Every structure is written in structure tokens, then in C-alpha cells.
Length: 100
Image (cartoon, rainbow, N blue to C red):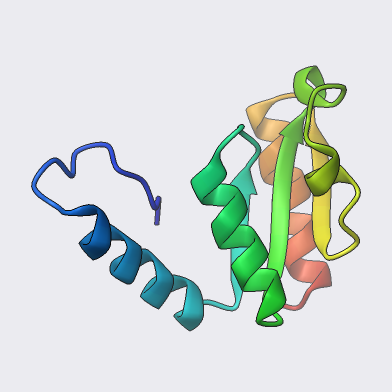
């Protein structure tokens, strides 16, 4: 599920926060496609702090500009991909290795 604000004009910030945090607490793993986002970074950090697993897909085009907080974090399984098909293959392999 995508946790974002688009299409949620009728939801308050507080309602979105409560909904998103509830979903994060109920999930075993977060799979994120790298983008510069304060909200996603907050959610990923919270999930890691609560022993959650994180996979972050980073395109080769973003490899040099991706955040050091993401690239340097040993608790994030980072997958560098070249195409959507490559990302899908890498993600499937990572989930198998994690036994999910």
C-alpha cells in the first residue's frame, strides 16, 4: 500500500499520521522506492527502530545523489536497479532470501 497524501484532500494531517503509523506497526517489512521524502524517511526510521525490515530500491541514476542516511544504514537492504523489470527481479530474490 502506498502511504501518501495524494487523493486525500479530505483527510487531516493527524488522521493520515495515525493511519500510517498504525499500518507501519502492523507490517513486517517496508519496501520503498527511493525518493527524497521526509515522510518516507521518518516512517522507515521508525520501522527500523521497532525491529522492522526495510528494502529500498534505488535506481542506478540516483545512486550518486541518494541520501547517505539511506545508503549508509546497515539495517536497510538496498537494491540498485537498472529498469523496472530488474527491480522486480531483485525484489523477488530479496524476499525469498528473507523468507517472506
